[in-house]
Image 1 (cartoon, rainbow, N blue to C red):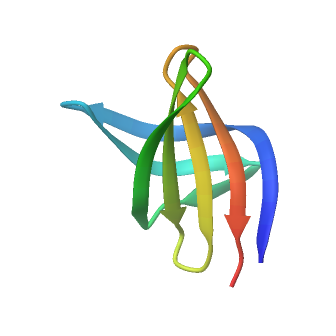
Image 2 (image 1 turned 90 degrees about the vertical axis):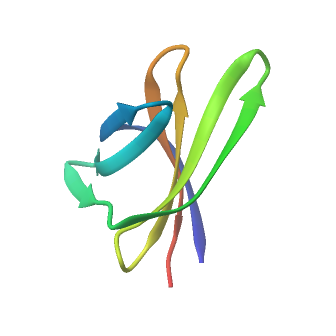
Length: 81
């Protein structure tokens, strides 16, 4: 089941040599650790670049987006088993 969320989140990430490594994110006062990044892609929303990540905590997959123009992160979707 896929649930649409589309809410801002806080993210712990490291930017190194043009790559982003996401370690955790916080949503609704819950800190969710990231075990692995399963997929990444880049899109545009009008003139805004959007970097997308599929992140797994071992049980669920979360789709998150990063907008580098305004340094904002969003939780887009949750994929439940």
